[in-house]
Image (cartoon, rainbow, N blue to C red):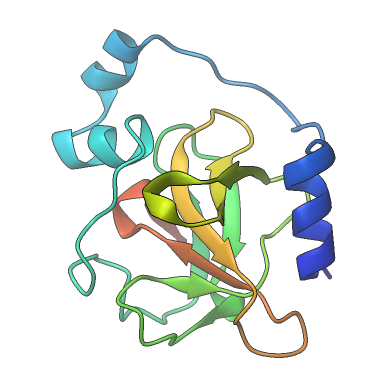
Length: 148
């Protein structure tokens, strides 16, 4: 189980190697993604709170990266955070997510990217439920749900 100290170590000292890499040009991504998906995943945007498709969805399934299909989160790790974005306590695999120190907008946060294709997913915070204490705050538009 990942804890906050693990996330900080990855962000500051390097992330685990992904199982595979997917690299495409911006033009290639634009052809495959809709405008909202491209803005969030490739331009590091954010969807408005409480507007995402998966914000209030708790049915069983796996959440994968909308860009490359890498499986990221299981619905069993999803919880209602009250923030307006889908929130999870753990990724499916330790090397599914890449962690980057983000100092934008006058804050210090940890940005989460798909470790396979570098799609911006959201951020992770240390205010989640026990036992991990993690809250992966994700953009719905960066995810696609695969039914179990």
